Image 1 (cartoon, rainbow, N blue to C red):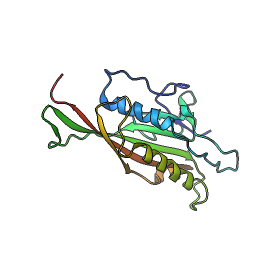
Image 2 (cartoon, rainbow, N blue to C red):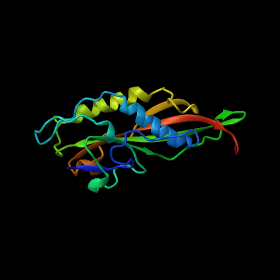
Image 3 (cartoon, one colour):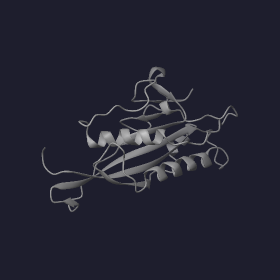
Image 4 (spheres, one colour):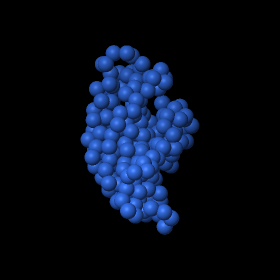
Length: 188
C-alpha cells in the first residue's frame, strides 16, 4: 500500500483550533475543513482495480508536503490524499490601514494519487484537473470561515505534475492558496 505520512493522528478528521491559535494555523485548518466539504471525482486504479474515493481522513495538515512518501504504517494515510502545508508569510510594507497591517498567509495544497508513470493523458490526469478546478473555485476570491482576519483569498498554480512523485508512480500536483489577512499593528 502506498501511503503518505500524516500530521493528524490516525482516524482524526479535521484540525482542532482555538481563537488563540495563530492566524496561519487557523487558515490551514479552515482550508482542510472546506476541502473536506467538496465532492471529488473518484480516482482510477492504475492496476485495473476498483476506483477509489478521497476519504475525509486523507485530507491532512502537515509541516511539509510530500515528506516520507512511503511512510511508517502507524502514521500513514492511503492514497488518494490532499496535504495542506504552510508556506512563507509575506508582509508588504505599503498595504494595510492606520492600525492594521496586511499579511499574506499562503497554504500549499498538494493533491496526491496513485499512478503508474505512464506518459499519456489516459489515466488520472483528467481527475487531477477536476480536483484542481474544484479547489480553485472553492477558494478564489473567497473569505475563510472561522478566520475573520482573512479579507480575500486567491489561487495560484504551483506544480501541475510534480516530477519526483511521478517517477515513484504517484501523480501529485499543487495549488498555492494565498490569504490576505488584515491583522492588528504592533503587539497586542
